[in-house]
Length: 352
Image 1 (cartoon, rainbow, N blue to C red):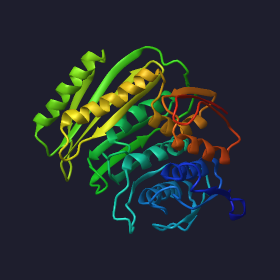
Image 2: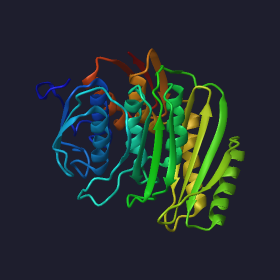
Image 3: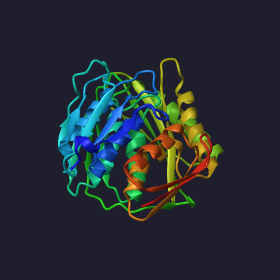
């Protein structure tokens, strides 16, 4: 049991100094049953202090681990999280907390953070959360459900998300439910990604003419033909409070997966939205790396608790990823070797 006298101290402004640092520290505290105090919360961002995503994540982790918390208010610059037991899993609908931030959390980000904690609880979990499910420069549902969860499955982590309603933007209105099986995690060797297995895409659309989605499909199909990427494309109509469109493209290899998402915006043609997702995915494919730059962030905590050695290559080492590595090492004497420099491709080896 962690005590207030043995808290691990984390500077929330270290490295990227954003939400990924906070989430990683909280998840590592829950998984290792060590108390943590985080000062200068989100100190590297333009909006420092505890965010609504932090509040919801702590609610879930505190319930699972019977944790004591201090400083848990919106905008607070310091918080303490002290688990008193191993995760007992969750069967709960997480409520949006009363906060002064006037925006909802990204449901996919929170649920992905919870995944390794729930998978290692030894019991079946079921959790739901309302909020944003499609957002610019954030984790979108179709990427989460297909790329993120698909990658976790290769480690032996079995999760089953379902979008009950779509939320375009931080005004929210969406809801995602997720079931997680107790899972035995095994490391993966993705040093060589092998042959391509499939190229896929989802066009999620709400409250817009279906002809818009079909234009996106036609453009994406042509792009794929010219680049020898035979996309299997699905158009999905989603329920939403407001109109929106989001295009997700990804490619699965024998030993790797990656892709990209592009959000529509007023005045932006759907062909440009499809082009953006395609170009980002193509850039990753040409790197010959096993995961894209964003997926690397999402799978590292799972890799850390998998038995054996994990090896994967990433198309670009981001400051966020390097910050996550630093946080993990504050909790565990684990060997995480990163070969490469920030902004360039890299290879990661994780040995327990």
